[in-house]
Image (tube, rainbow, N blue to C red; front, top):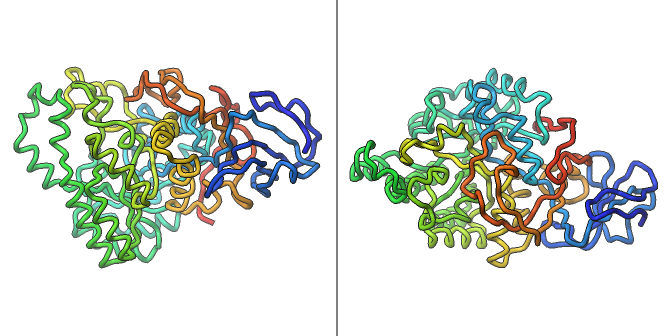
Amino acid sequence: MQGQVSHSGEPVAQNGGMLKAWVSRRVVLPNGELDGAVVVDRERIVQVCSRDSVPAEAVVTVLGDDIAILPGLVDTHTHINEPGRTEWEGFATATRAAAAGGFTTVVDMPLNCLPETTTVAALEEKRIAAAGKCMVDWAAWGGAVDGNQVHLKPLAEAGARGWKCFLVYPGCEGFTSIDVENLELALPVIAASGLPLLVHAELQGPIDDACALLPLAESAEWRKYATYLASRPDEAELAAIKRLLELCRLYRFRLHIVHLATALALPMLRAAKAEGLPVTVETCPHYLHLCAEGIRDGATEFKCAPPIRSGTNREGLWAGLREGVIDLVATDHSPCPPEMKRADDGRFNVAWGGIASLSTALSVVWTEAHMRGFALSDVVRWMGAAPARLAGLPTAGTIAPGYDANLVFFAPEASQVVGADRLYYRHAISPYMGETLLGVVVETVLRGEPVYRDGGWFAEARGRESRPA
């Protein structure tokens, strides 16, 4: 093995050649860790081996003993909002934050941008908007809304990785929820495609019933988190998931439940998987780290939908991850301008519901996972391999020969205090502000070349769209 490096990872000796090798005592693989090396030829991993087996012609970088090599993470739930609402977030700022957070691929949600990604023409506008701006790779979900069934197959043929739909009001007028009649018109097309349908699984009925018992919208009682929590009851998620599983049983489409917030749904999801239904489930960092008991009144930076529930519920979600009923963790990075998030009087019913977390998600999840005895290999399975499978990205999210040379150099034992200067997305709003989190991303490598290192980015925006082969 040739070459040595400084603690920062910069080579101080090298012998030339096309091959590169990064060496660490903790190379995180799908089923554990290796004290060894990742060997890269241009954009692909060609070998994962012991230190002694690194090809002699490779340019070698030996990482410090405190640095693990993770695969580049994949986030399948990112709201980029460009074109049309770039003042909320855009490709440049979202992918900058993603690189700093260890993500090398993000999959954009079809709402909040203008036009919404419900037609091929809108997808092409998104591609034009993304050109030359991305620090990491990206892909797009299409949207399934009332009346756009004719556009679903063309979207798939044009490169959308699947579709997102809402069974409840999405928060933006241009992207409608889909009723059961329209959903059943869409499902044969979706099933035939083999692509997943991602569903925001809440039903309006239980929400309306709950709100009928709560104070009027103008009441100061809506400053209380308990009031907002009561307005989005577990039953809204449970009723939606029950209905979706019935449809999945009938149409056999790939169903993916996004941002599961209630652990009460785990028994029916467990039974559905045991039955062999093609169902996958995600939860989010905020549901795994935060709890309702810790949210103070007026703290609208904690608002999301479905809401953050109790500490007991949080532990149930961790149990679902441990068992495998929950397949993956996605950020649901959903930013907005400060004036939309910070309602003047702190009323939760007025503030925008969304949490931005691309730059903090890995540390948030690792902080909680480490506390519960999980390994780094568990975290990268939830945030790398599983989301890559969902989005049909066969060479992303894993360290193995033939995969993209997307790597993250991560200091799992280091800590960081979350501050505005380390968030990197467009608006520095976070429910984690001031918290001390475990784990720091030191460097992110995209297809064999660094894109982020120690708070700085490399000038060239090398990200590109990941399209089906």
